[in-house]
Length: 365
Image 1 (tube, one colour):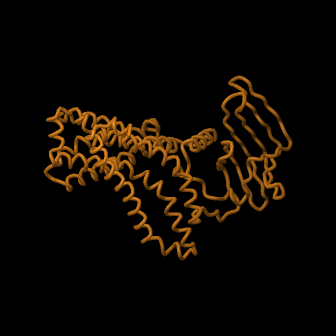
Image 2: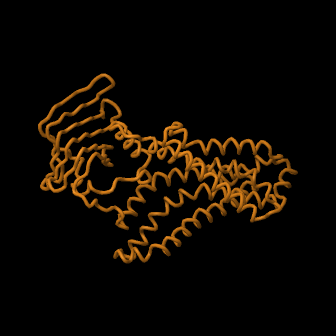
Image 3: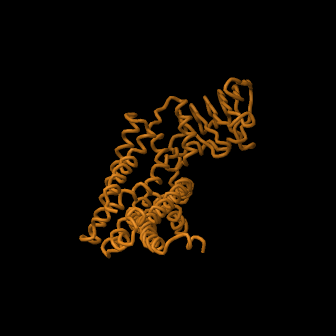
């Protein structure tokens, strides 16, 4: 009741019209994607002897990722079609005659776009785990044919540890050239850096025994406590040798924090991480697009009163295609290091923000 009293009846009307379209498109697009994928892939899934229940669950786990991708487009569609409808029915004109400016009129839509941004951030955090579960159900994570693997990085969820491994041998259950990084947050939980010449897997103990190495404990910026050891058991590293042969995670399968740890480890190994840095920042930049693209679409929607739905669809699809092309372009620019990777991820949003603010300033209020 308090929220209803704070909002003018016109605000509630504008917000409800925007919300109905946004929800319909945000849920409708993933359903369409599922229908298309079922049509194309169901035969292959059944041929792989996957249980129908597992297939159905995999599609449910895929919804967060798909919804995250379409949410900015849903906000744009809702903005264009709701404001376009208000314009065609002279509701905006009537509001202006009552002393309500265009900017004040679309304030509820801005609130809706802000809520969509918050939802997108939640989906961005949930999607990696859901994608991993989906891959497990579809058995997409398969082992390499070879029994050896070289120069790779493995991250564990527990304790935020990152393992850099020079070589892994499954038959011998042996790792060589092992480096372990655990980022701390102060003297009570210091940063640890462990190196070991080798590590052997014990089936009985269910873990790895490190040999001939050293542990560096960084208590602060100037204090480095070094402890050499002949043997050290890592209770956090319980992955079986066969599991280390699994295909490495893609950026979309890692959250913002986990991807940051992975990037740090790759940087220490001398790898080029510009592409990963761009992908990481996009996990925030894409959700923020929900609000940015509303600023861009709102003034454009006031010009579609004559063309009706066709113009609305054209504006929405055209804007979406242009934005996706810019994202692909900036990903390439960031990956090549032409522009700072974090800045590259924000370039489409910055461009749309500038154009959107300019268009809003030109709208007759």
